[in-house]
Image (cartoon, rainbow, N blue to C red; front, side, top):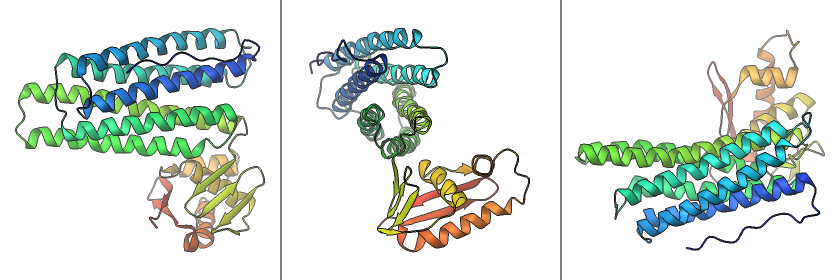
Length: 314
């Protein structure tokens, strides 16, 4: 697999346009590396040649990261997104490093056939890399970011499950100590790649919120138009109070993840709120009545922690 030529913004582009062009380029390198790694784990590619391809992509990513850090280093110190973008670059570099480390160990151990959970993890890494590239493109176009960041959270959950399955597989199938150490090492690097993708999702969501790029948030039949401050369920408009809207926005933004009670109270009611904490439960009750019958979603209470918005399979 050949490494595709580098692309970048036009010389006349603004610093911000150049930054997002380089983020796109780095995300593309990650996707190419993930494609090669998945083929290696699936037995469709030779280990040594594939590792060299991924190593070249990792070196390319390092060069892009240096260019990005140089650009961001010259940005005004009071620029709001500067620190978040610097964090984003470091995390993207970590994803490529983890993919390269997994490929290197597959090559060094001359592995011809991966265990089934490792193949599942390779598929999760590839799926995450694809959504990562789409998320970076969405940030650049100021369009819907959250569908892709939510997908990154799901891929990380899948990789976590696959890692546990890998450990169980090794111990229940009588693997040797050497194989246990070898595969645990490889699978932990695969999981690290998806962990960093989830970290990237969190930073991308923060950037989207700060820049007003949330656009639409969608879960099942529930659609929130953030700019127009409107919510529809199965195509029909649903009137929400300001507080209901803000509670729902947090739950949609973190779909499938628990949002703590303290976070909901702080972000929706403010630091100086001193009322009854049952106010939040009351608003959740109202949202349930308005959304759950036709929205294909469920708001789940996590006792003593907070609330989570889940999809109901159709």
